[in-house]
Every structure is written in structure tokens, then in C-alpha cells.
Image (cartoon, rainbow, N blue to C red; front, side, top):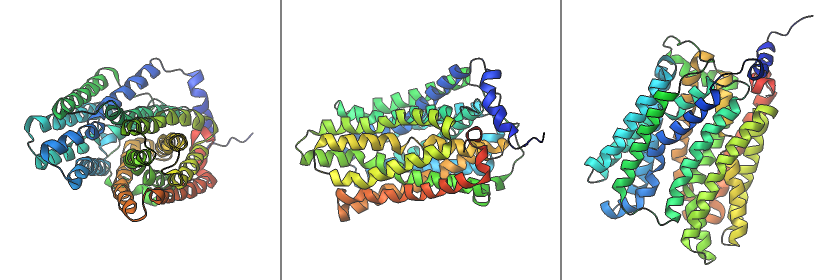
Amino acid sequence: MEIDNERVPAISNLQSPISDPLPGKWRTLLLLALAELLGMAVWFSASAVVPALTAAWRLDDAGRAWLTMSVQIGFVAGAFGSAVLNLADRLSARWLFTVSCFLAALATALIPALAGGIGLALALRFLTGLFLAGVYPVGMKLMATWTKADRGLGIGLLVGALTLGSAAPHLLNALGGVNEWRPVLYLAALLAGLGGVIAVLFVAEGPYRASAPRFNWRYAGQIFRQQELFLANLGYLGHMWELYAMWAWIPLFLQASFDLAGVAASWASAAAFAVVAAGGLGSLLAGLLADRVGRTTITILSLLVSGGCALVAGLLYGSQPAWLLALCLVWGFAVVADSAQFSACISELSRPEYVGTALTMQTSLGFLLTLFTIRLILWLEGIVGWRFAFAFLALGPAVGVGAMLALRRSPVARKLAGGRG
């Protein structure tokens, strides 16, 4: 009987969790998710102290925006440089993760220690983002070294933890906000340092780690030349077009809508927390399902639901808060549910020895795009109002669905989710 050699790896991947269990696997993955959440705390904590910094440094709208954007620009620069230099694949992932956590913690702690105004703070925030490029994508690379048939669940766990971290500042605001900004930044720095300690003590690369490749700066551009990588990344960019703009402005959207309905602003902050936090559950459930029914299926469904919510949300603006919140909870659940699956696709489609490079390049492009869409929505709100501004975000999911449908029809889709596509 003739054996289809291309199908053998997919079959063995499906059997490996049963026939060859990995001792300590889920303990390691849970600690990795915790380390990632703590390491990224220096990014997520910024929005909690912006009101206090505004009062202390008399910031205008541009200054407040740059406090967030400087981190993202630093992250894009760090991720792009890391991808070109293949750092996530040529260096020890555990040590790169650990050192990056420590450096991000140091850059954050120097703001309350030294910064008396926005100039130095922006430079340190840029460095924070630069160092975080060694935390988020490297964490996904570490997760990939432990998972095969359940990779969607593993990376979904990681993204779910980060989603809860993103939601935390809104809960702080709902509970009264933060008036003293220095302790918050010191605490965030301490948490990031703790993330590094957890990584170096308890996290190691798993058995699916590939040997370190030779330096190949050209591989960072492979995503533009290899059709399946291009399609997976195009789907991811469609997702990122929507995600961070939605996360950035859903609190303001809800507050403005609740104001029209006569609801207190604290309830809007609590609603924003619930909407963003719903994505944590979405990431986990999507990971479980994607490993069973296929990554392209789950990403397409998530994009359709989130894009539909973007179109409809504005029509409920100023109406009954309960109806608007219900829709936004569905949106928050779906808008990030597919995120981990795009990363899982890249890890399965790229050359094993360059998984870290491919993931880092993917996140670099995605976060670069968010700089545009975050500003776009605020500009559109000034022209067409909240009733129609979010509808433009549906363009991203539409492109993403097209890309994932094309990938699903491609013969290489057999590499995804153990042959499920």
C-alpha cells in the first residue's frame, strides 16, 4: 500500500499527546502564561496612570496619545530588528524572554525615578516597547516548543492571559482610578521583573524546539514570498486592523453612549472591562475548537462575528445600555478569539528553525498597522460620529476572511491543526 508521506507528520502529531505524554508540560505552560502576563504589565499599566500624569505634567491630547503610541512604536522597532537578526531563534528563548522582562522593568522604573516631564518619559516608554518585543512573540515561540496537536489551545492560553491584562486598567478606573502614578509604575516594573524570575526558574524550551539556525536576515522577508505565509499574515493584519482600535476606543464609545442614556461613567468603565476581558474566554475556547475543527474555520467565524459587530455597534449608540453592552460583549469575545490561531498558523507553516523569526515579524507588522487604525477611528468619530465610526473597522475582517478562505483551499492547509486546515 502506498503511503502519503506528507500526511504522516499530521497523523503522528495527532497521536503524540496520547502515546508520548510530556511530564510537567501544563505546569510549564501555565507558568509561561503567568510570566508573559506579568512581563507585559508594564505596557498594560500605562492607561491606568494617564489621568494622573495629565494632571502632573499638564498633558494635552497629543501627549496622552504619545504615551501609548511610543510603546507601540518601540515594540514595532524591536520586533522588526529581532526578526531581521533572527534573535528569537538564534538565542536561548528562555534567556531572551528573561532579560527582556528585566530591561522592560528597568525602563519603566526609571520613569517615576527620573522623569519630570513627558520628554524623558516618551524615550523610556519607547525603550519599554523595544524590550517587550523580546517578551510577547518569544513567549509564543516558547509555547510552540511544547505543543503540536494542541498548539491552538496553548497559544490561546497565552493570548487569553494577555487579554485579561489589557482589561485590568478599565477595572481600576471603574473602582475609582489611580491618583498616585509613581507607585503604579513601580509596581508594574516589579511585576515585569517577577515575570522574568518565573521564566528563568520554571520555564524551559520544550521537546519540539528546533536547533538554532544560521543567521539569515532574508528569512524575515519570506512572508511576502511564500504564499501560505502571506495569506496567514494577511488574515492576521485584517484582525489587527480591528482589534486595537476597538480596544482603544470602546471605553470612550461606551461612556459617550451611557452618558446619553443617563448612566454613570463608572458603569461605562466596568462595561469596558467586561468587554475586553471577554476576549480571554474567547481565546481559550477558540484554541480548544481550532485544534479540533481547524484554524481556518475558527478564524473565519471569528472575523465574521467581530466584523458584523463593528457594523452594528454604532446603530445601538445612545440606545438601551443593556442591549449595547450585550452586543459589545459578543464583540469583545470574538475580536481577539482568532488572534492566537493566526500565530499558530504561522508556527505550523514556517520552517521549524525560524518559527521565532516568523512570529516576531508577524507581530511587528500587526502592531505597525494598529498605529494607523487607532488614529483613524478618532479622526472618523470627529467627522461621522460614533454612530458610524466603528463600521470602518469591518474592512479588516472582510480582508481577513478572504485571505483565510484562500488559505483553506490551498494544499498546504493540511499542515494546520494536524491536517484539519
